[in-house]
Image 1: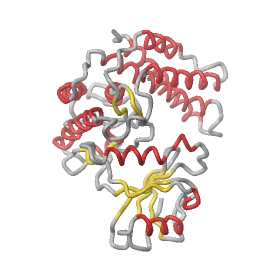
Image 2: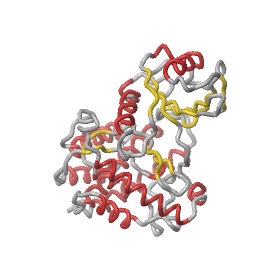
Image 3: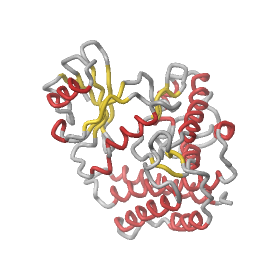
Image 4: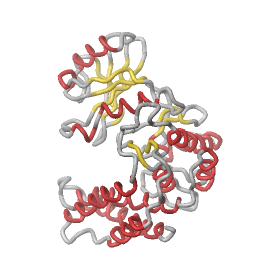
Amino acid sequence: MGTATEGTAPDGIDADGVGAWFADHVPAAGSPLEYRLIAGGHSNLTYSVTDPSGARWVLRRPPLGQVLATAHDMGREHRIISALGPTAVPVPSTAGLCTDDGVNGAPFYVMDFVDGRVVRSHADAESLDPDQRRRAGESLVDVMAEIHGVDVDAVGLGDLGRKGDYVARQLKRWYGQFRASDEQVPGGLGLPAVDQVHDRLAASIPEQQGAAIVHGDYRLDNCMLGDDGSVVAVLDWEICTLGDPLADVGLLWVYWSDPDEDAVLPQASPTALAGFPRKRELIDRYAAGSDRDLSRLPYYVAFGYWKLTCIIAGVYARYAGGAMGSVPEEQVLGFRHMLDSLATQTEVAAEGIG
């Protein structure tokens, strides 16, 4: 994750190609450029780009070795962020999109660097004072309401995805993923709760209240905060689409931990610390800033737990089935414990479905 100058760039950056592209498309950038990997892994790769004057940009590209272009669509991300730029939704300004694989081995886009912090761990959250934590929670909800209030047709995103039947489509997609995961594990996953809750969810889908932008993974650590705790940039638009915005609200409830609760995932945002608003306060604030009926919120919370269970089932199945190679047994058991805990929470949440 070190810094590199042109000619010795980190993996995923062709310094000559990217440098030439910057010269043509970002005339304000000086040379030589320095690159540093900010975030890697199986998601899109993120690099900081710095010129000799200290000016900074961010470059995003697919993971190394990615062959399914639609799975990590740079054009789609760039389009969403560019369209939201003139709105009240805080996103970085985009500098350009490169779709020529010959430049850097894969498509990429460049946006302005936003100075802020991402709160992911307890240590991150402890660096905020109680007033900043409260502001972070309030701003997170206010920005979510802004996202859901965007006129998708007016900003040119009306054809980003199908507008209707969002939950039904999501149930089909994730249940198919779960069944595939179940087949990867000898003897199956042994999680009848997933099947049972799927049937309950499918039988009582609420009427969708219009079509809005759905971020798909909206939570504290997918946003960047400014000095006072306010959200200054929403990140990770990879799975954004159009559909039922209350799915974002339900999933935020799942990820957010009150003081008397355990985090839904070990790495979940540490929102139980003093100062952060409580879940009910978040929902009340969203209701005040949105005209949507939240009476069926328990449904979307249950759906959020169920979806997350399906996702973790896939992770566990890859480890338990040997797809990830040789890994310590305690790591596999850790995922199993997480999966069983989520399945239990999904069952409990489903009891609140009206």
